[in-house]
Image 1 (spheres, rainbow, N blue to C red):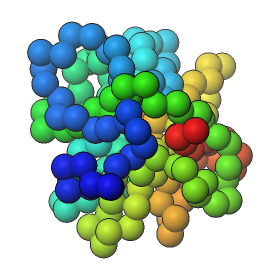
Image 2: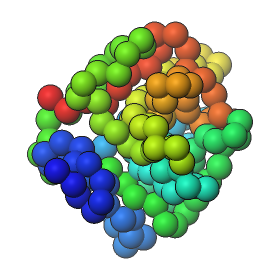
Image 3: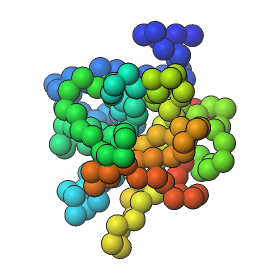
Image 4: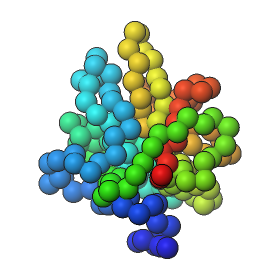
Length: 164
């Protein structure tokens, strides 16, 4: 089934155009939180079109902006992106570092049409550990954007978002 020209994610789950008038985070998919030294707060899943790629990553509601890794750097946008909304879908984060689960949520695609799956990565800075949303590409692996860089997730330190 197609929604907006794309494959349906799972019943009750979809990407919707972000509108700066959205004042509530109800229904947004939380993929973790920001480090306390960076202001804390939840990080939500979103995607953005970038040079022909559709890239899933993190949205920080308090900053009204999104950050994503590509070409070794972390990029930022404040408009023209979509947030992942849940309307009663049953979701689960599943730790799996060697293959994509059948029910993994596809959050985007590369220019070459390779799927980018929604993941979250466990990341430690100083003595604080948080989960940060990112993406998994079968040909390249799991990544997040943090501190202005594209960072690869450590072995067994990341999870796929899946529909149950």
